[in-house]
Every structure is written in structure tokens, then in C-alpha cells.
Length: 290
Image (cartoon, rainbow, N blue to C red; front, side, top):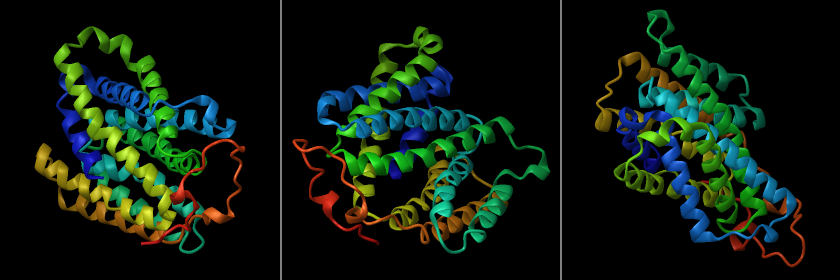
């Protein structure tokens, strides 16, 4: 989470030179190259469902990155992160069995306090981008769990990130490429390591070992981390109402995720054909709750 928010804060400095889409493109393109070279995945070692899930994960990864960077260009980092967190909150609420009506209501109050629509200052486009990123993040979590269960090591990520880079290239390259310099290209390489290579790899490994409840409870801290990074790195000092709203969203996330545990690894069907390498010891363990 710290890598994600530091990477986003550092990317803001590129907005004036290549725009939010350009910053997202540089990070995703480099991340795809890094993982492709480092892992060197062989499509023949994937099941059909594992390969399709990895490709789909790449598409939603590009979506969450492009939409969220567009949101950060218009909203404070803490506000954008809290709105984006409604995606995993929705997943947890849909999977949960208790308090299913309480947590969305609590999150809705938090969103109202964050955006303060009664003041007439909310950037509707920025909110729309953040909510689109939330939908993509919900899909990202579901697909990351599936890829982590079906594909060993980081091979799934080595397929999804190049796909994300290609999608981002198709969206951003035509308008951004003429503005690129060698300095920007090298900067993009450094940012790609900070985000998404390191955090996405850690998330994939974490989702193999934790229940949705444990993972989501920890991830509920991300909007708060975003608020702190926004204050320290970007000098985005919020008013009282957004701070209270962010606390509501974090509380709703913790509550919803605590009721949305995943199925044990032993209960999920194994459809990897014989001759393919196993997912490793971590995939055979029972999920560990924090």
C-alpha cells in the first residue's frame, strides 16, 4: 500500500509533461517489459482458463490505472483513493453474510462527506473516473485471486502486465509519444518498479495466503495512507468533513471484509492438467486469517 501511494504521488509530477494517461502508460508499459523479461512465461504451461484469466486481469489492470490517474489529476489523493475503495467494498459486501446493508450505507455517508456535493465544488468528472476505477479494482481482486490459484509463481502477472501495457499503449501512445524524452522514459522505468511491479507482485502472493477478510481488512487502511501521503508529499490538506468521510469508508471496508471470507483452497477444484507445474506449497495451504 505504501508503494502504491508513493508511486501515485511521484506520478503526479509527470502530469504537466505527459498528462495522467501518459504517466499511467509509462508505468504499465515498463512494468510489462520488466515482468516479461524477468519471468519469461510460456503460454504452453498455462491452462486455457488460467491464460484467459491472466489476459482479463491485464485489461482491468490497465483500466484501474488509467481511470485512477485521471481521477488523481482532478481530486485529492485521499478522496480519489476512498472513492476507488468502494470497488473492493462492494465485492466484500456481495460476498458477506452479515451487515450487508450496514456497510454500504456507512460507505455512502463517507462518500458524501468526502465529495461534499452541497458545496458545489465536487469535480464530477474526477468522481466518475474514481468510480470507474473502483469497478475495475473490484474485478482486479476477483481475477487476481483466480490467477493466483490457477497459475504458479508470478507467471500470471507476467502475462497480465504486458497485456495492460498494450492496452495503455493503444489508449495513450498516439497523443503522448511525441512528447516523450529519454529522461521521461527513464523516470517511467523507476516509477514502474515502485508501482505496479512491487505492489502487484506482493498482492498476488498475499491473496494466495490470506482470506478475503484478512486481505480486505488490511487494504482498508489504504485510503488513510493515501490521505497521509497526500498531505506530506503533495501538500493536500483536507477539511474536517473529508477526514470524517474517509474514516467512514475505512470503517465500512473493515466491517464488510470481515464478513467476506474466501473458500478454502482445499474446496476449490484443481483444473490444472497433469504435466504442468503445481502452484507450490503456498497454494496448498489453508487460508490464514490475520
